[in-house]
Image (cartoon, rainbow, N blue to C red; front, side, top):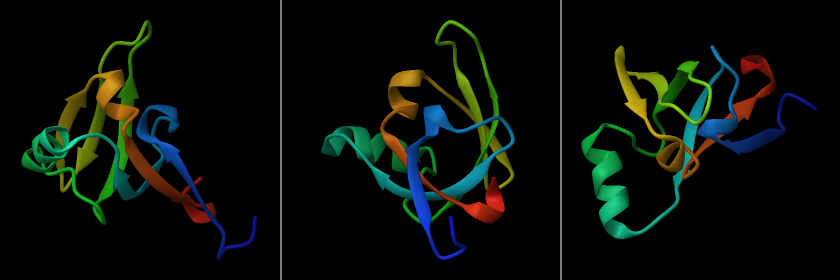
Length: 86
């Protein structure tokens, strides 16, 4: 992958301690409003802190704050990963 190439994956598929930039929020209007109320917005840098087995919550860091999301929500947050972040 060249430095200019980017790949977009769901937040739930990111590795622990991997970071990227939120590229899109999938889902309906109410879901997007909920995510934005949690400060999950397109263009924000996000880092996956931990994940729990058996589809437990995923802990992320955004703007020096930590937030726990369920797998269903994390599957709808698309993150742009660049080679330098891997």
